[in-house]
Image 1 (cartoon, rainbow, N blue to C red):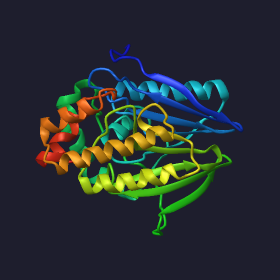
Image 2 (cartoon, rainbow, N blue to C red; image 1 turned 45 degrees about the vertical axis):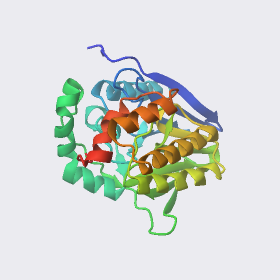
Image 3 (cartoon, helix red, strand yellow; image 1 turned 180 degrees about the vertical axis):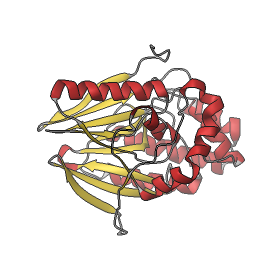
Length: 289
């Protein structure tokens, strides 16, 4: 059955040295928040990043990956789930149950304990687009408890640098660097052209510190979890947005007053529906699921 959702965007974001990176972005319109998922195409296989939110987009992302496989003969090797937010894992059961899925142990533990609660919390909102089951990643990405917490591996001849970032947009987030391509997969630590999903001021401060390290890094392309791939100018804009939000909260803006202030300050940013997702959690103590 054809999807009733607006069509996604599909693009090649980088092509160099025998590697191609593909990005698949769900719609910006309506209540969608432009979820972005990615494919790293190596010489012999594909590595996927995150699984989309709504069933139809998850199916279309899988169809896109399968098209790449059919065209190149390169199978899907694995999928990395970067963090526990439902718009990144809800699509796993729809389209990726047959794929090896990797995640941080903290993300796996959360899904085991609270995954079904997350689905129940969203059933009435998503209707037929909600997932029917929780898919638990089978493999843990164990990052040594160093400072910073970094793990380096080679996959299909390409260096992958895994970093755990704590207490920013989410409690535990896996960052995947591809230094040989000068690409960093930061997912929800950059919202590219969109309004940001905000957290407590102390977490926003940690988030700013992480983005400042990206500004000083050798990476020049950042794959966002929402919106199109970003450069360092967009990273700096995210920093400015977070700083402005912290000042507004410190000045006493709450709820709709905060939302209207941020909308007026950043009229060019897309996906304003994200305010209605996080405001109850930020100011009213709603569940973090």
